Length: 271
Image 1 (tube, rainbow, N blue to C red):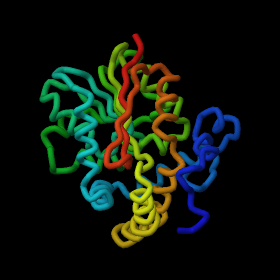
Image 2 (cartoon, one colour):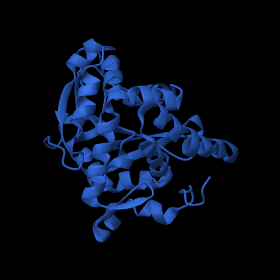
Image 3 (tube, rainbow, N blue to C red):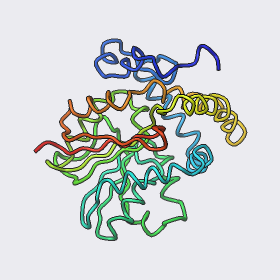
Image 4 (cartoon, helix red, strand yellow):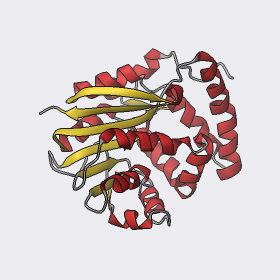
């Protein structure tokens, strides 16, 4: 691997993801690049515009299908009940929303909230689980300014999207705001593998095979080069837990999956 690629030990760069630093510098990281706040938002939008039509297929290929197991395990942790109101922030093509719908049955009320219209349309037009997708409410909006009143939802969840948000803490504060007191929260995100030998294999796969597949299947080498960079510069599980606690969540715990490639944080909103 190139010596210029980000490593798991760059604590200074991880801290640059925090809102205080972003607001102070008026710059945000997107992988190894440092951009203005607006440039990062524009770059993320263009990325998802370009991959929306094959987003689910690429996720399945790149994760060997394991991402469905991570999402199912995370949804199970929430203990969803019939009739609850669920907000899926940055819900994209709707995997978590569909799984929540299966868990709650037709009595559930699910809102998929995403800033990217192409991603929303790609998900709602899918033929798989079409009956559940028809019951989902789709809202286009910004995770940093969620367009719902305080204390609206029983459950708020976000999956594999926090790394792309410019002001992470602000978005988490918004998620906490729209959650009812005592309501449950889920954040599913990529992280650092635990075993060193597994981490080495994962690095080779991430920085060499993943971009090649992105290029061959979608003509998007750069997009799939940036993805592993954002993962390595994202907060470690303990650091993310501290951010969640600081915005109003309590009982925050996390569970590593597949040796830590994915981590599910869960918590509740303080009464």
